[in-house]
Length: 166
Image (cartoon, helix red, strand yellow):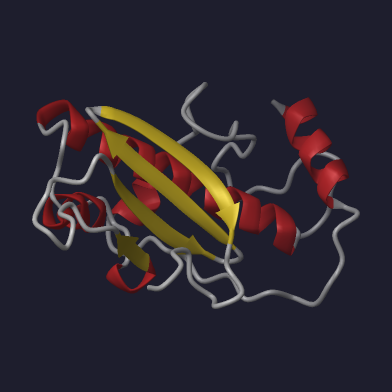
């Protein structure tokens, strides 16, 4: 675990820039519980953060901003994966309100959440529903299609949002 964390820090050490403001997408009691979650294999990016607030061996002081951003994104990714997985198990084609309720119930702040429509303008059922959580400079995008959940992380759009036209 320490080797993986050290590799992540080494890979991120080339990142430069000011001190970005981290705006957690999680709120409420789920924040502490979710902060120790790790992304499961195959469900999204591999988690390398142990959830501990202790500095890694060989480092001094608080974690760097890119490492903190990566840890926050991994936490949100796991939260989205878990919440959508539970929802899809009971509702393979959930409605927009169900996705919104599942994610806000898991601790995602409503202001950081965007959810696609589950019905087309002509009233047809959408093939898939997507949710996006704005986390710093990342968008954690989750999709439910016929009970299968896919979660990925993409950069924020130039508009500052995750969905075009939102």
